[in-house]
Image (cartoon, rainbow over all chains, first blue to last red; front, side, top):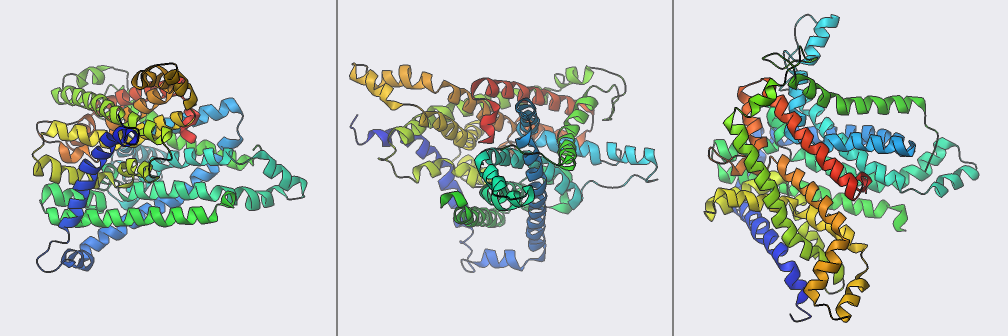
Length: 275
Length: 262
């Protein structure tokens, strides 16, 4: 095999799979949205002028942003504790975070169906201790979707940040301390800036993951709390409005890609290690 | 980096882990409850919900499909992903840098958009049989794992060993199989197993490519949940958690679980 071609021949099958079965289909989906006889942007005009569609978009944004914010705070504190733990304890804690992460989305969402249901465990418990006298309807609300989403993404955040925090050399905090910095100041001025790129990576993963999720809003939100993922599915497979579904898909692609691009630019700029 | 941490922070972390594992314990408990409805703590102990799984033909059928799909999709993805990762590591300066980004597109593009597009263009547009479309979809979503995890192993491989074999007269293809591959075995096993579990748990791509004829276990579970609310779902979930435990044990043996924090 000719020398020059070898790297390309080895890469060709994987490239073909991605280009033929991801590139082509996704581009065709995006192209469909511009094919309206009333003008290339007619579908988008419909989308952005429809009160219902915008409600779904904003709801999805809101759920994704709240999930990201809570996951950042919870994940950072937990990762901080995990990173300081003694070696044996640390590996146990990492196992405890990996286990839910590798358990499927359906199983993890189902758990919240059992907990938050009308005859669920939380209602049983609240009735039993006498806080409430009637079971609460907690399922199929925005809150139930957000709780399940946070549950879904906190492990991802913990694992991302443990890696980042462990990578911060001990010398730096030692140096800060020997130069007279109090632990709080050393944390704010040394650890936090170094953790920012990791926080950004984690936030992007959580935001795009929750923005595009399907199973969790389907199970815990239902028809009343439709999000972009469930809305896309409903348009495509229930009402068979493929052009409408493609427009939803295009909006999802634009939102996730812009988030990834902007945030990775910011991450590169604020990285103190990149000097 | 070791520092003393405030006891309140430790208490907070304990609560977080309670929050992470509690729901899974609840599933475990309600799967062995001797009641016809889901409840926790379990009332009585029984394994009948586990035997019940195998009496529901849809679960048995989709379990087989899911398993075949996860093995087949991952194998296909590895077969094309390993050469691609090898080319990226070995010929770093002869290939454009953006090539590595193409293989992670399946993570960048929302899975639900990929599933919808595959259904529209490939399964219906090109009339590709549904099982083949599913296989291609699953191979796609696991490709980033195959290329990245194997690539990580290849990046720390010293290619001069391979050159030594070749200069001693070993044919290139043989050097690849007898020198390179055994050295990155850990990466291949870990990548395979992570890809396998990703495929096994997939919902967003499969949901568009399944129907009355062909379905996967997670999709069947979703459908079952909408109609019934008995402990069978919990027992299937426990089986799936068992697979997770096996996966974690294998990753721990090969690359070590700390690999996942990198």
